[in-house]
Length: 111
Length: 111
DNA sequence: AGTTTTCATCGTCTATCGACGATAGACGAT
DNA sequence: ATCGTCTATCGTCGATAGACGATGAAAACT
Image (cartoon, rainbow over all chains, first blue to last red):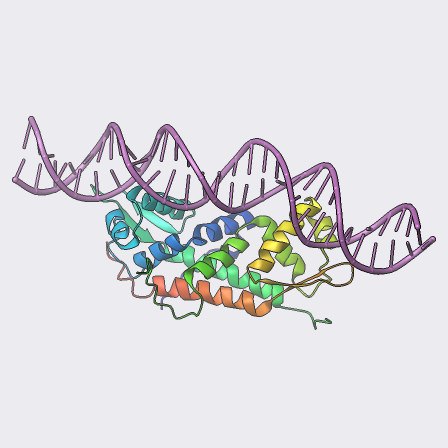
Protein backbone atom coordinates (compact mmCIF):
# COMPACT_ATOMS: atom_id res chain seq x y z
CA UNK A 1 0.00 0.00 0.00
CA UNK A 2 1.30 3.35 -0.98
CA UNK A 3 1.80 5.95 1.68
CA UNK A 4 0.17 9.27 1.17
CA UNK A 5 2.11 12.43 1.92
CA UNK A 6 -0.40 13.75 4.44
CA UNK A 7 0.79 17.34 4.72
CA UNK A 8 -0.41 18.51 8.12
CA UNK A 9 -3.55 16.51 7.70
CA UNK A 10 -4.46 16.22 11.35
CA UNK A 11 -4.48 19.98 11.73
CA UNK A 12 -7.97 20.10 10.34
CA UNK A 13 -10.54 22.12 12.20
CA UNK A 14 -13.38 20.48 14.01
CA UNK A 15 -15.81 21.92 11.50
CA UNK A 16 -13.85 20.47 8.64
CA UNK A 17 -13.67 17.05 10.19
CA UNK A 18 -17.34 17.24 11.04
CA UNK A 19 -18.21 18.08 7.46
CA UNK A 20 -16.26 15.16 6.09
CA UNK A 21 -17.81 12.82 8.61
CA UNK A 22 -21.22 14.16 7.74
CA UNK A 23 -20.50 13.35 4.13
CA UNK A 24 -19.70 9.82 5.20
CA UNK A 25 -22.73 9.46 7.42
CA UNK A 26 -25.24 8.27 4.87
CA UNK A 27 -25.60 4.69 3.66
CA UNK A 28 -26.08 5.77 0.07
CA UNK A 29 -22.87 7.74 0.12
CA UNK A 30 -21.00 4.86 1.69
CA UNK A 31 -22.31 2.66 -1.09
CA UNK A 32 -21.20 5.25 -3.63
CA UNK A 33 -17.74 5.33 -2.15
CA UNK A 34 -17.50 1.58 -2.33
CA UNK A 35 -18.62 1.80 -5.91
CA UNK A 36 -15.93 4.33 -6.64
CA UNK A 37 -13.34 2.26 -4.88
CA UNK A 38 -10.86 0.24 -6.81
CA UNK A 39 -10.55 2.77 -9.58
CA UNK A 40 -13.84 2.09 -11.29
CA UNK A 41 -15.15 4.02 -14.20
CA UNK A 42 -17.21 6.26 -11.99
CA UNK A 43 -19.65 8.04 -14.20
CA UNK A 44 -22.88 9.07 -12.56
CA UNK A 45 -24.98 6.67 -14.55
CA UNK A 46 -23.11 3.64 -13.40
CA UNK A 47 -23.62 4.60 -9.80
CA UNK A 48 -27.29 5.15 -10.47
CA UNK A 49 -27.66 1.69 -11.93
CA UNK A 50 -26.28 0.10 -8.82
CA UNK A 51 -28.09 2.11 -6.20
CA UNK A 52 -31.80 2.10 -6.92
CA UNK A 53 -32.02 5.83 -6.47
CA UNK A 54 -33.06 8.53 -8.86
CA UNK A 55 -30.34 10.08 -10.95
CA UNK A 56 -30.90 13.46 -9.42
CA UNK A 57 -30.54 12.02 -5.95
CA UNK A 58 -27.30 10.30 -6.83
CA UNK A 59 -26.00 13.49 -8.36
CA UNK A 60 -26.77 15.29 -5.13
CA UNK A 61 -24.94 12.70 -3.06
CA UNK A 62 -21.96 12.91 -5.38
CA UNK A 63 -21.97 16.64 -5.03
CA UNK A 64 -21.90 16.36 -1.26
CA UNK A 65 -18.94 14.01 -1.46
CA UNK A 66 -17.15 16.38 -3.82
CA UNK A 67 -17.84 19.40 -1.65
CA UNK A 68 -16.47 17.54 1.33
CA UNK A 69 -13.31 16.98 -0.66
CA UNK A 70 -13.53 13.22 -0.53
CA UNK A 71 -14.20 12.70 -4.21
CA UNK A 72 -12.62 14.44 -7.16
CA UNK A 73 -14.73 15.61 -9.99
CA UNK A 74 -13.67 15.84 -13.61
CA UNK A 75 -16.39 17.12 -15.94
CA UNK A 76 -15.32 15.08 -18.87
CA UNK A 77 -16.91 15.50 -22.25
CA UNK A 78 -20.26 14.01 -21.67
CA UNK A 79 -20.07 11.66 -18.79
CA UNK A 80 -18.49 13.25 -15.79
CA UNK A 81 -15.81 11.34 -14.04
CA UNK A 82 -15.90 10.83 -10.34
CA UNK A 83 -12.94 9.48 -8.52
CA UNK A 84 -12.02 8.89 -4.94
CA UNK A 85 -9.42 11.15 -3.41
CA UNK A 86 -7.33 8.63 -1.49
CA UNK A 87 -5.36 11.24 0.40
CA UNK A 88 -8.51 12.94 1.65
CA UNK A 89 -10.01 9.66 2.75
CA UNK A 90 -6.80 8.70 4.47
CA UNK A 91 -6.80 12.06 6.20
CA UNK A 92 -10.29 11.48 7.51
CA UNK A 93 -9.29 8.08 8.74
CA UNK A 94 -6.29 9.61 10.44
CA UNK A 95 -8.43 12.28 12.03
CA UNK A 96 -10.81 9.71 13.43
CA UNK A 97 -7.95 7.64 14.72
CA UNK A 98 -6.44 10.71 16.32
CA UNK A 99 -9.74 11.58 17.91
CA UNK A 100 -10.16 8.11 19.31
CA UNK A 101 -6.64 8.03 20.62
CA UNK A 102 -6.92 11.42 22.23
CA UNK A 103 -10.14 10.36 23.90
CA UNK A 104 -8.97 7.00 25.11
CA UNK A 105 -5.31 7.71 25.59
CA UNK A 106 -4.27 8.73 29.06
CA UNK A 107 -5.87 8.18 32.42
CA UNK A 108 -5.68 5.35 34.87
CA UNK A 109 -9.45 5.52 34.80
CA UNK A 110 -10.60 5.83 38.37
CA UNK A 111 -14.18 4.84 37.68
CA UNK B 1 -33.85 -7.77 -2.23
CA UNK B 2 -31.37 -5.62 -0.48
CA UNK B 3 -30.59 -2.34 -2.04
CA UNK B 4 -26.99 -2.36 -0.94
CA UNK B 5 -25.29 -5.76 -0.95
CA UNK B 6 -22.34 -4.48 1.05
CA UNK B 7 -19.95 -7.35 1.57
CA UNK B 8 -18.49 -6.40 4.88
CA UNK B 9 -15.39 -7.39 6.67
CA UNK B 10 -16.55 -5.37 9.64
CA UNK B 11 -19.51 -6.66 11.54
CA UNK B 12 -21.40 -3.39 11.43
CA UNK B 13 -24.03 -2.63 8.85
CA UNK B 14 -23.79 0.40 6.66
CA UNK B 15 -26.68 1.98 8.51
CA UNK B 16 -24.99 1.39 11.80
CA UNK B 17 -21.72 2.87 10.65
CA UNK B 18 -23.57 5.78 9.13
CA UNK B 19 -25.38 6.43 12.38
CA UNK B 20 -22.17 6.46 14.37
CA UNK B 21 -20.51 8.74 11.86
CA UNK B 22 -23.51 11.01 11.97
CA UNK B 23 -23.14 11.19 15.71
CA UNK B 24 -19.54 12.27 15.16
CA UNK B 25 -20.37 14.79 12.48
CA UNK B 26 -21.10 17.78 14.64
CA UNK B 27 -18.49 20.11 16.12
CA UNK B 28 -20.33 20.28 19.42
CA UNK B 29 -20.34 16.53 19.75
CA UNK B 30 -16.67 16.31 18.86
CA UNK B 31 -16.01 18.86 21.57
CA UNK B 32 -18.09 16.83 23.98
CA UNK B 33 -16.13 13.71 23.17
CA UNK B 34 -12.90 15.54 23.75
CA UNK B 35 -14.29 16.72 27.04
CA UNK B 36 -15.18 13.18 27.97
CA UNK B 37 -11.81 11.94 26.93
CA UNK B 38 -9.24 11.12 29.52
CA UNK B 39 -11.71 9.85 32.05
CA UNK B 40 -13.12 13.16 33.16
CA UNK B 41 -15.94 13.51 35.60
CA UNK B 42 -18.45 13.82 32.80
CA UNK B 43 -21.59 15.17 34.34
CA UNK B 44 -23.79 17.19 32.03
CA UNK B 45 -23.19 20.45 33.82
CA UNK B 46 -19.46 20.33 33.35
CA UNK B 47 -19.88 19.86 29.63
CA UNK B 48 -22.32 22.74 29.56
CA UNK B 49 -19.86 25.04 31.26
CA UNK B 50 -17.24 24.37 28.64
CA UNK B 51 -19.38 24.54 25.55
CA UNK B 52 -21.38 27.75 25.59
CA UNK B 53 -24.57 25.95 24.70
CA UNK B 54 -27.80 25.65 26.57
CA UNK B 55 -28.10 22.76 28.96
CA UNK B 56 -30.96 21.27 27.00
CA UNK B 57 -28.92 21.37 23.84
CA UNK B 58 -26.00 19.63 25.47
CA UNK B 59 -28.31 17.01 26.88
CA UNK B 60 -29.64 16.38 23.39
CA UNK B 61 -26.15 15.99 21.98
CA UNK B 62 -25.25 13.61 24.77
CA UNK B 63 -28.34 11.61 24.03
CA UNK B 64 -27.37 11.31 20.39
CA UNK B 65 -23.94 10.07 21.39
CA UNK B 66 -25.45 7.55 23.78
CA UNK B 67 -27.95 6.31 21.21
CA UNK B 68 -25.14 5.85 18.74
CA UNK B 69 -23.43 3.68 21.31
CA UNK B 70 -20.35 5.84 21.53
CA UNK B 71 -20.93 7.06 25.06
CA UNK B 72 -22.12 5.12 28.05
CA UNK B 73 -24.68 6.55 30.34
CA UNK B 74 -25.00 5.93 34.05
CA UNK B 75 -27.84 7.78 35.75
CA UNK B 76 -26.08 8.28 39.00
CA UNK B 77 -27.76 9.79 42.00
CA UNK B 78 -28.20 13.32 40.95
CA UNK B 79 -25.62 14.09 38.38
CA UNK B 80 -25.61 11.59 35.59
CA UNK B 81 -22.34 10.14 34.55
CA UNK B 82 -21.32 10.12 30.93
CA UNK B 83 -18.35 8.16 29.83
CA UNK B 84 -16.73 7.32 26.56
CA UNK B 85 -17.02 3.78 25.30
CA UNK B 86 -13.51 3.17 24.06
CA UNK B 87 -14.35 -0.06 22.30
CA UNK B 88 -17.15 1.53 20.32
CA UNK B 89 -14.96 4.42 19.32
CA UNK B 90 -12.21 2.06 18.30
CA UNK B 91 -14.72 0.10 16.26
CA UNK B 92 -15.75 3.23 14.42
CA UNK B 93 -12.16 4.05 13.73
CA UNK B 94 -11.62 0.54 12.45
CA UNK B 95 -14.68 0.78 10.23
CA UNK B 96 -13.45 4.01 8.70
CA UNK B 97 -10.02 2.54 8.18
CA UNK B 98 -11.53 -0.51 6.55
CA UNK B 99 -13.65 1.66 4.33
CA UNK B 100 -10.69 3.71 3.23
CA UNK B 101 -8.59 0.67 2.57
CA UNK B 102 -11.28 -1.07 0.59
CA UNK B 103 -11.77 2.05 -1.47
CA UNK B 104 -8.11 2.70 -2.15
CA UNK B 105 -7.05 -0.87 -2.44
CA UNK B 106 -6.13 -1.57 -6.10
CA UNK B 107 -6.05 1.89 -7.62
CA UNK B 108 -4.50 1.61 -11.02
CA UNK B 109 -4.64 5.40 -11.02
CA UNK B 110 -4.59 5.82 -14.75
CA UNK B 111 -7.31 7.98 -16.12
C1' DA C 1 -30.80 18.49 -39.58
C1' DG C 2 -32.71 15.40 -35.48
C1' DT C 3 -32.24 12.02 -31.71
C1' DT C 4 -30.32 9.88 -27.80
C1' DT C 5 -27.64 9.81 -23.83
C1' DT C 6 -25.77 11.73 -19.82
C1' DC C 7 -25.59 14.97 -16.33
C1' DA C 8 -26.53 19.09 -13.27
C1' DT C 9 -29.77 21.99 -11.49
C1' DC C 10 -34.28 23.72 -10.17
C1' DG C 11 -38.51 23.38 -7.60
C1' DT C 12 -41.10 21.07 -4.22
C1' DC C 13 -42.23 18.05 -0.67
C1' DT C 14 -41.62 15.78 3.95
C1' DA C 15 -38.77 14.61 7.80
C1' DT C 16 -35.24 15.59 10.68
C1' DC C 17 -31.62 18.54 12.91
C1' DG C 18 -30.18 21.94 16.05
C1' DA C 19 -31.11 25.46 18.93
C1' DC C 20 -33.64 27.45 22.70
C1' DG C 21 -36.79 28.29 26.84
C1' DA C 22 -39.82 26.23 29.98
C1' DT C 23 -40.90 22.64 32.85
C1' DA C 24 -40.98 18.57 35.83
C1' DG C 25 -38.56 15.07 38.43
C1' DA C 26 -34.99 13.66 41.60
C1' DC C 27 -31.81 14.63 45.00
C1' DG C 28 -29.04 17.20 48.69
C1' DA C 29 -28.97 20.73 51.92
C1' DT C 30 -30.94 23.75 55.11
C1' DA D 1 -40.97 20.97 54.33
C1' DT D 2 -38.89 23.98 51.48
C1' DC D 3 -35.21 25.66 48.61
C1' DG D 4 -31.65 25.13 45.30
C1' DT D 5 -29.25 22.28 41.92
C1' DC D 6 -28.85 19.08 38.22
C1' DT D 7 -30.91 16.63 34.59
C1' DA D 8 -34.10 14.99 31.02
C1' DT D 9 -37.82 15.96 28.28
C1' DC D 10 -41.35 18.72 25.91
C1' DG D 11 -42.76 22.19 22.63
C1' DT D 12 -41.52 25.22 19.19
C1' DC D 13 -39.03 27.44 15.76
C1' DG D 14 -36.04 28.06 11.51
C1' DA D 15 -32.86 25.68 8.68
C1' DT D 16 -31.32 21.81 6.41
C1' DA D 17 -31.29 16.97 4.50
C1' DG D 18 -33.00 13.78 1.38
C1' DA D 19 -35.96 12.30 -1.97
C1' DC D 20 -38.26 12.90 -6.39
C1' DG D 21 -39.75 14.61 -11.15
C1' DA D 22 -39.05 17.97 -14.63
C1' DT D 23 -36.14 20.71 -17.29
C1' DG D 24 -32.20 22.31 -19.88
C1' DA D 25 -27.54 21.84 -21.72
C1' DA D 26 -23.87 19.47 -23.93
C1' DA D 27 -21.86 15.67 -26.32
C1' DA D 28 -22.43 11.66 -29.27
C1' DC D 29 -24.82 9.10 -32.59
C1' DT D 30 -27.72 8.43 -36.36
